[in-house]
Image (tube, rainbow, N blue to C red):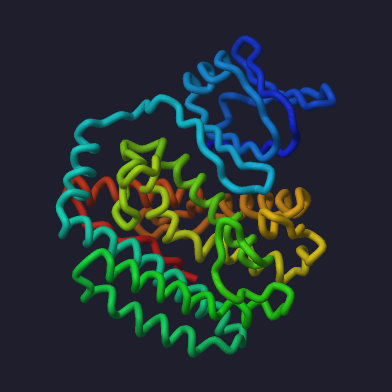
Length: 331
């Protein structure tokens, strides 16, 4: 699979003939291997011009932008090269039919709940006192199948996730990183900042993988397709956030690689310093390269490839070939 390039410095992304290079404010140049890049994540102040955008579009390279505080801003989504009117119609059909949409939304919620349970059980085996959280998630998860409307389903999803968050303090065991409550836009404490940053990364990676399929990222099922540009990546990311983002947070804090000194408190809430963002991104990239055994293929695949396979499964569901069964970690 092609690679992701991360740009933290300020500078300009330029095209020279059929190559791309990044020139920093200090005049340093770094050439990017176009044939080996699938996406660029820009955390610094990165400028570019129309000529470069044309080349990025031809080369099918996606660019995700994050602002100064590390929050997702937007994506340059090149002209879709795998447009499929048939698949778009199947997606719309499943969105407009209430029963089909609810069915898919329940599958996403169930997949997310199952992976939250995997995480909780993993740490329960490591003698974390979170059996009450596991039991409560199992109890709430049972309500998903009987749910008959989207609003109730969203409420169940919120309750499952809030219950899951109750395990964070016991898993991390550091008062400075206490969860307290979920706060966004802006996050109000260290733990919420880590969750928000990691989730933004996850949404971007899933969006990049959707680009490599026939799916339209504008049509989601759990998250309403309204005036937001992309929603399908939010749906699919729900399944992977517990086993990728949350595990990274627990790993970094467990190793004491992050401390209160890696954050800044301001009017924009609590934000990570650049060195902390780099550390998180490095761990995130390594996690996506980690391989897992994929039963149906009987071979090891990376998490990044696993996300692509999840999208192929969704395509088969929409075409009526095979019902979608979300990925659940086997560890």
